[in-house]
Length: 340
Image (cartoon, rainbow, N blue to C red; front, side, top):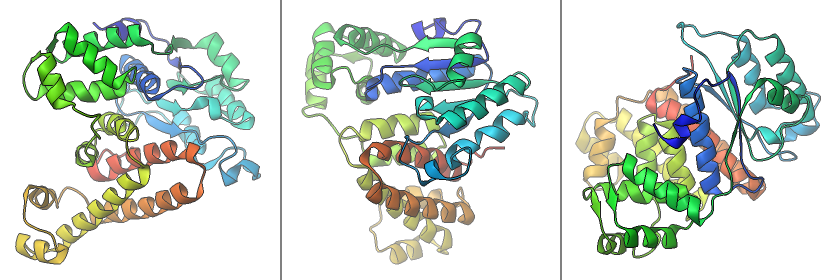
């Protein structure tokens, strides 16, 4: 059992995973990892995810509505039980950005709902009265700021979990290159696994001559597989090196290509209509052409257009949340992981 898993024994159904106010990608990745483990401990496989928009960045902030659009989904999620006898749960990301009126409604729902399961991820204080309720009734998991020592401990533990044996000098180089960004360290370990379990300094130096960008097709592979956790992790790593508009353009091209593949009668026609060259990438899309419904491709295209507008008009502080929400939706449409 890992250290993280050990902290989740006898978990209460209401959980707060808190981190430093200016949490970086490493701390944020650990917060989401703790939240996922908490939900697993509580028997929830596919929670309803609520991404709270930053304060002052939504046109809904000054409307007459009690709750902003993205937050309103929590109402039916807390009021309805599972259709299949399993445990339903809610994951609220960036709960510190809830407005006071939203915190009041959610607090009331938790008071009247029968055995609610909810995990709140927050890099800061959760507004009252919800914050007070969670302190009284909930479980608290704290993610501290990652320093060099804790990053080294994380690296050793993560390497063992992957079956890797890394010598001390190789570990030092990895920590010097990626620092305390455990999300990037995890991606580096995933890449090292391909070449075998024994990792020495020469292998690390040859593999990471420069800090590598996470290939966008790895991200799309995770989305196609419907693996939300993996896709979000790869998104976080990519955003350390690339701009979200780069990834958005890649996704738009992918949706276009999959739409052509769905309409083409055969592979040669697909190549001709797409104007691309034959190769493994084209073959992969062609083999997957029946996995995604045309209606889902249409939904994905509309979501990409809205995300493009948001990225080009909204403050940069909202870009990561926009891409995370898009990623979760794309995993549903591409991977068939629909909310029931």
